[in-house]
Length: 241
Image 1 (cartoon, one colour):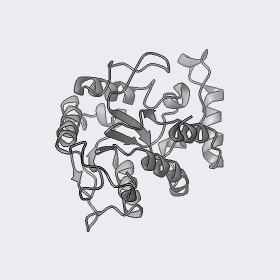
Image 2 (cartoon, rainbow, N blue to C red):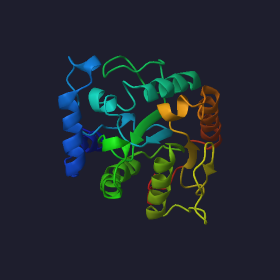
Image 3 (cartoon, helix red, strand yellow):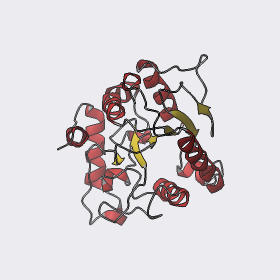
Image 4 (tube, one colour):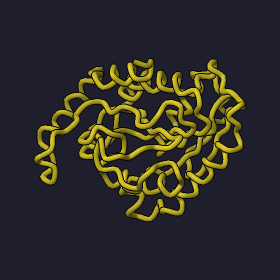
């Protein structure tokens, strides 16, 4: 078994945050009527995709009846519907629909993770939970040595990515960049470029704050940056990625 596979096995057994453990299991016990016959995952959700991918997306946390039910990042809810359609259009997924584990979905040179791996009440993790879960994300970054571009889905993911970058020795600009859709942050040649992207949540997609062309533009830009950062330019292990 690879080191990355061992890390994911350890992750899904994590019970470090009592409030999140209680909530993820409570959601699974009550269920939503539409999924009454399904067995919920109700554990931390592992990274989706291969650790050799050049594009890494970082979200906030699993959805209560999406990833917390299916056990796969962004799978089974409206946010995922938007995201996977965009990834398919951009050539980063082999199909535009993600329904459940084993449905044939494959990411292509891309991977998806999150700053918190268990569903939080009201979709708002506490800072201590975010920081406790950061150890998993940091270990993933250690093993994802091919990443050239990170798309941070939402302000919390963007801020946490920059926070971890500081801890990893990346050259984070000062003053620290503020989140915005399409904002790009470069840390020098030894670290990935980070692109900010509005989260494809219903509060953004239903209101028109995020449109499909806006999402497509982010992944088109990610493709451009990946092409511009040649594979023969290694990312320094000392920088964390």
